[in-house]
Length: 136
Image 1 (cartoon, rainbow, N blue to C red):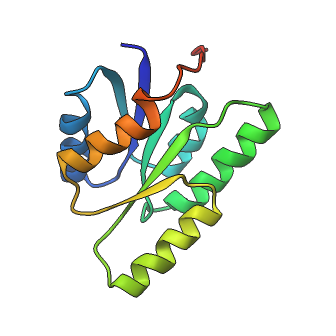
Image 2: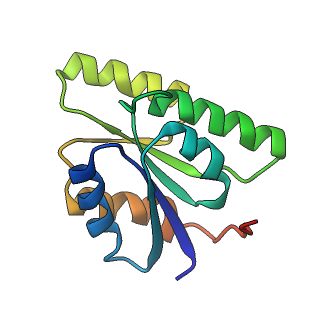
């Protein structure tokens, strides 16, 4: 197992479901509950699933900060997937546009399914060459 995935989700039920889905693949998976933790740890992960509606630093703001940190440190960027709560089509399109502007690569609507998670892991992690990052 060499690919590393970070789940950033404050809701325990959603976080547990994501971990269950992801752990069925040949990847290492970790979870945190805040945007602040995501910014701190992002450089060690190939893929980050982040809830846009986190308390404190939102998922969108965390993604902005992660992208700034990657540029500053000249790191290979992690793929960031936003998880967006159930909303109207118009509100969802607006949320997705805000995500893409912040540097988020893809969006996944809630409720999440195992097939959606599988597709995104395949697209953003398993099909990509491995980036080497050392944990301090």
